[in-house]
Image (cartoon, rainbow, N blue to C red):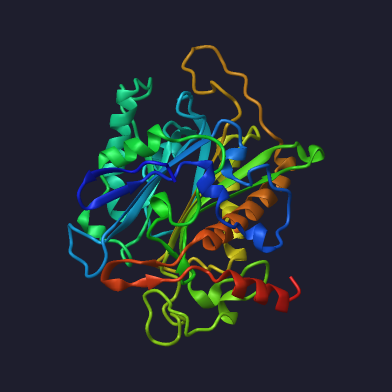
Length: 392
């Protein structure tokens, strides 16, 4: 956490979770002995892809009964700059909707042009509009060369209305400005931070999570980084390292949203997840769309089946091919990995996505929100006992 908090109103405490100390002060899934395939980068985070900066603003205030417009508040916003705040150069990108009961603005232009021209923001369902407009205002304030002629910001969402006064519209433009101003490279906060503050994943406290993979030199030596905002799944589905963790943990442990004693078994997967994949491999937009699809493989490893009510939307971008967007009349020289060599990148995406989701769960701490709804954090000792039971 930042050493100082700022309080713009008497009822609202805004936490800017930007310091490395925050991320280093909590256990991650590898610290608990969860076995994963592949080789992570030094930070095991999306910021292992050089140039990427991540920022977030976390809003937590109030307790007790829901009073729309007052609270309790459990929400925020997370921002990803593909090349950092100081470099607005667009990147090649592609996106994919595994199930479309969700929103990610700006994707029609990505589909048409092949470029991601703005940062990416992730927030709650009813704050997409204010975040989108605030991103344009921030870009204008910072004289972005792309802002003057019109922008189509990329803003995605998942629903935090079980814990948060989602209809109170508490996220304000200044909150997005703070997240953007404080974005940085290095360690990335996980769990109940930023847009992930009020999220629930597989019946446990969810939120933001990140991971990375580095390919062997024979496979190109490229890095793939993933950041997720997970709010999906039901407890019986939860699978970690191939182990049915959700079924093993006692069902009398409180389960968000369901009180039928069956932990939502008959309710289906109605949550959502946003997955952002970054790589330094030189990929073209159609190849990045293929990469985005592989996030489904990592998501499936954790147990989700992307139910009818789920919004599972994925975006992939490449930081290679700088200045490919430049509007000079002469042809551009573009590099691209051969399709015959994409498989290691596909595997890295699936692996990093799986770990990022588990990291979000491991970082999630028990939280009580509106009407005293409580969502427990994934019990670390129970997780370790279950993995040991299955010799993992």
